Length: 258
Length: 208
Image (tube, rainbow over all chains, first blue to last red; front, side, top):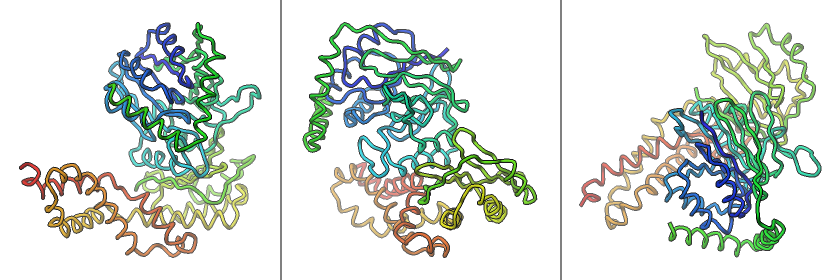
């Protein structure tokens, strides 16, 4: 029976990640659906290396993408899925997994955004190879597929992602971004959003029975203080040149530490 | 036949679709309608010699179309589309765009890998003497990029010399057509072919 631990939106909170992997132990695969680490990836990498299970990463809009590239090149168990499809053998069963990172933008296509042309690239790749997906991982959610906006409780997913449902026919669609943990079934697809990992939320997914469960690990840290750290970092994002330089430096630091 | 998806410039918006009504209108043509209730995507299907061929229209802020047709099914599917267009609220612009994309799809399908491979081979043969002059250590590290560049130039050359279908030209400008063409032509295989060719030609140099 294959089980996956699914986390998203950790937003550099290493303490939350450590608490989760210390408390949840019985799983064969770790899936990270974006917004994991931006300025602390080298600290996260130490823990990624210690885990003995395959780790699949799809990036969000608050992630050090160059760091994930370094990680997937240097650590055998880490797979960074950037607008691509991969096959992975878990417990003698082959899983076909598709991943599209970042958030949707009508025009922008960069480290943290994908546009309709990026969707088309992966859609046409799947059409060419007649790929049927077991798991689709995106940071952005599809409309009506675990896309609940906190507070308003309205739906905030994107209809543009439907084409990947129609072509890939995934059994499971994992997303993040919304911070609201939510599990629902939609047209035969199990939609899973593990929620705000920053506060210890996550999901355990049974890949055989197609069932998921949300959990929350109690954290011993002051979340308000951690939040302040994130928002202090966030202003850097407004100065693009500094921001990208910091990410690049972070990846160089990571490369030398691995 | 390779199935392909295209982005539509003109938005599709479907509301309250009556599948039965549409089905009755096109049954005589041997075409069928399949509605995906969750995404409101509409598939128009026909069978040619036991093969399923179809068009899928996916509505949304950015709308898409998936095409899997042949010259033989084109007529049936286009007639079926015309017949159901009033229920799907497809206007003239939508219809023109879909027809232009279908023509482009069938045109791209006539380009087999052989044409690109021949162009790549020609380019590499023309330039091999220049490439050989590079320092072997640099050359070893450059091979992948040279292969990629050769394929890009080959595709650019082909796209500049082909005659695109009239209906596609009426709808898209040449630059847009070249872009779609470059996106859709299978490049991965051509790249590994170019790399193989380069390695064969430069074996002695690299191994020394």
